[in-house]
Length: 386
Image: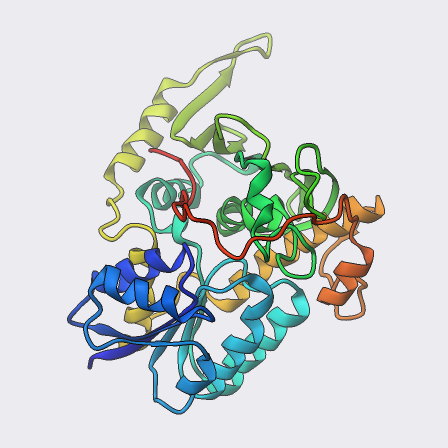
């Protein structure tokens, strides 16, 4: 069965979605591209040679058209109404990260998915890479012993003018800064591998972007159920953009970018290399299969498989909500100075977008607004090699 696909939002990230669907021409066809600027939608259709696809300005025109699958590539604050409308109309939905700009909106989306019986997947394209799949496989093997510490460095660099784009740099429209919109991939990967923390303490600042209300750096300390501790640094002020995920087990450590080190104790308790365990872990990693379809294409394949064969989604709506909840926890702790204990419930001041807008620290006022950048080239995802 050929699935009919609609792309909602023709901004920079939409190209990754379109390319992903085009990798499976015998299984799906893009029939519509929607954007409030119709010329942007038409440009995408022309650019990718989407024969027969129509350019539309208002997504509600599609709700009666029996679309099978929708990719939502619009700013975060618009996700909830679009996703809920399409699910109620009977479509499956793949929505870009972050899932929404509040937990209230995420819960509306989850309820819409449950009520419709349709699939809701949240983009986490970096899971669908060989380094991430191998790292997950190694951690699941438990060869490293219990995890005692995890370190997440989500280091990016963005210029001052990055926040001039009309929807960026405000709590209302972007929903947050680098923690929500850049570190989301690393946070998703960490939660996939570790499970959720039980509590955290965080700080954040805006050190280099005085045209944005939101943070450009944050740091969070986490405690997990089994006793492990963790550290997440989210940033758009790090030149060089070095990024890493490090998992310290009782017996060994592994990371992305890939490195394995194992130690045993000498008589005085100081370390010496455990070459045998290092070799075992390396052999396990080498034997795990490479990913066939990488990034967005891998996630699209997973969604198509789930639609066609009722197989499980690797990244479902609940997974997207868990990532958002941890990020909201960082914003709450950094704004109030208090320790945050999970879960964050509907009674919490930070549960709604209005609550976050009211209670989160506003660093600066947004001074400049541009509708579009002439240079629309962007970098996608984490730079983690195996």
